[in-house]
Length: 263
Image 1 (cartoon, rainbow, N blue to C red):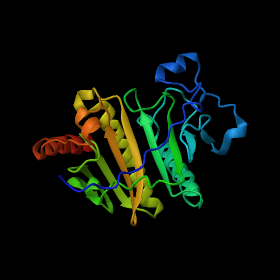
Image 2: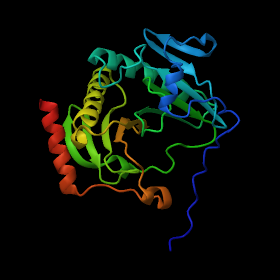
Image 3: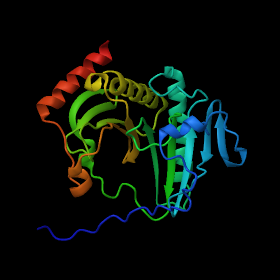
Image 4: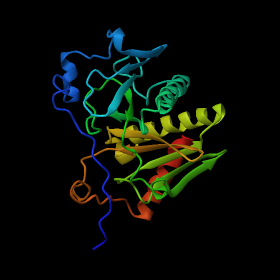
């Protein structure tokens, strides 16, 4: 048995603060709080259709939870935005992320997106979350190997690979670009959108309807990790054992993705 390693501390969920919070995407049948957002006192920044707002339900102790409402269109999402709209959205999201990163109150700041019923989200209306953690390093348990794997493409500083040491599995698409540079970030946004379209419309014969999208800054690199979501494996829930596909299967998905990019 390996020696005991220090465990990452959990986030503390406040049940009291969660009273009234939507519990599942079907809660929007009672009305969507992000359509015609009216709580002006919680707005941190607006730009066109983008709104950065305080999360009404601050359910996690020693954090600041904020939301980026991506669009006024309840049924639109990253797979359907125009290319220019998606570029502008990610630029806005990165600006919000950096603003909290510069706040000395927070040890780390998370930027991520839930989409679909198996993603862990409670509202369908497209949004991202920016969460400042006062005492926790959100990337403490991650390693460089979690962002390496089967190469899909490499072009002008932008690289894409499929993790062979995933955080959870099964398929984790890593998109990596230099952390600075407008042109590089436009290409980065375009590839993220194409990867999302592949996941929702082509991967697993089009049966994947949920994903998570996470962003990281590691060294001089800006990284997006896109993960299609299905039911979570008990190997991960009970033992923290991630799973991935064989290299042969990952190569097959790589070939499908490359063909999709050329179509």
